[in-house]
Length: 461
Ligand SMILES: [Fe+2]
Image 1 (tube, rainbow, N blue to C red):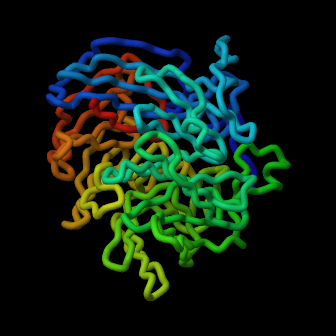
Image 2: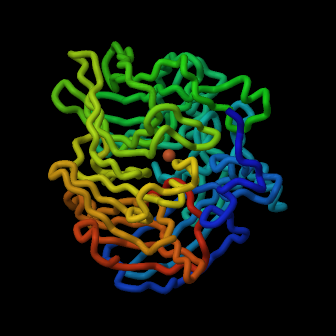
């Protein structure tokens, strides 16, 4: 396996992935429809936006992070901003002074994968050893964040907030470690505990899941490759057939916090939807790629489909159930149900991502499902579709409740959707309970937002 795409050939520098070259600040954006009253806050989304030819943009995952944000208040779209995360390299490329701050293991990086808010901070996050970057409410870089010096190593791209305890959970990994590190950041924004979990081979652990009792670990056979690193790969993680794929249950509490591991079949998982305890069992919903996964080419043995894994500690096994065979990614729940039983999930069918990452010959297996958002009712067993225009290249959808105490799914689903006619992006706001219907509001941004990764709705208050 080699790093296939060269800079001038990478599909991730073209079309809907092409980086933008300007930072934009625009106020009072035009809105079609009506923004719901009470939908006050910021929709934020992070993604790679390589900064010129010196940026290691040869792989989608390596471009410098750029955070895009839309501020909604009182039925108005107050502003749109996009800002590069100022790592040292980015700051110097822009002719600015790097704000400085802690760096783990020399891995300063413009965090490009997720953007969250916790304990009053807005954080751009990334995995594999680097630290998050703190941003202002208006997306300017404050500097790297090690949670006031309480984080011993690097951090993680994906986090899970337990809203009942206020604890923010993460699972960090780093090629120089012989373990994963479970990290809990308390509601005060400081690390309240870490647990090292020994693992062989240095696996990539992009995401995990949380239940009320367990941290659910995914130890799958994409592992750090010294050969790939020696050959100059900047993403030296390769399929390792000798690495036993397994799922781990790490108890969240108790004096004996030993992980119990369960073997699973070879596969790859970037993202979980959610997990919860079901009696003595644990239910984990996730998007799974069949068989061998090529991290350099971002191609698995099949498209990612939504599955339910049920972990039965008494029987010592994990059973799999297909939930939806459409190719889909970026699964999200109503964040208020993280770690507890969920009924609904939202995911994206992104034809352009699939063409670039799933189908080796560049074809998409079912054009009818191109550019569609999905809403899964996992109790009724139904799937709702919101179909977008061809070439709309929709990204991850994020749920925002209509009020803080509203029922699950009582709220809005938001996503950036490219408008090829305008050559610019819209923030589309759907009513979750009229999912197939027309958007309740569409905010027209003055610029294109490249296809990227993950985001958050950060409600005021
Ligand atoms: Fe992710």
